[in-house]
Amino acid sequence: MAAKPCPSCGALKGLSKLSIIMQKGEETELIARLAAPMNPQRSVKNLSSRDFLLFVGLAFVMTAFMLALQSRSLGALVIYGVFMLFFIAGAVRLFLNYWRTRKVAEALTPAWREAALIWNRLYYCRAEDLVFDPRTNQTARPDEYHQVLLHYPPLLPGINAPKEKPTR
Image 1 (cartoon, one colour):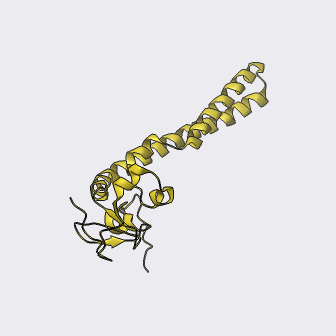
Image 2 (cartoon, rainbow, N blue to C red; image 1 turned 135 degrees about the horizontal axis):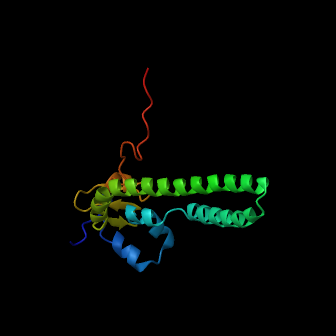
Image 3 (cartoon, rainbow, N blue to C red; image 1 turned 135 degrees about the vertical axis):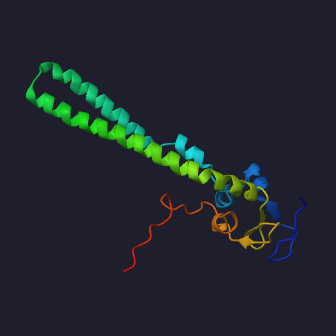
């Protein structure tokens, strides 16, 4: 599709397709502002390293206390029991975090696919500092184009939408 003029200033000069800006990779500040919507499935793969370190750290400490248990003292048994509880709590937390992240990713994937299709047709006007969709002529500032043009991420009740306060 040939570039249409900017709906705001009417210029053809200074227009760049967002995907081309990303491919060139020269303007890091602009790239950060015009980034494509992130695939929600990546967040499932990138679970918090803090959670992983917590799990591994607790496993290490638990192993150390198992070795200390060989003395069979009451203090060592109590400390081992406490760390065993922390280990189990860490494992449960890691599992619940993974499950919740996966649930959110599954709910966001259809909206992300649609947003990615729209993003692939968007242009950036350098003169006006605007992102626009040549198909719909909608415009938005780079900092707000995800919500205005892509409608991504959508607000999903019970997942990422703000909870409504009860009215009295």
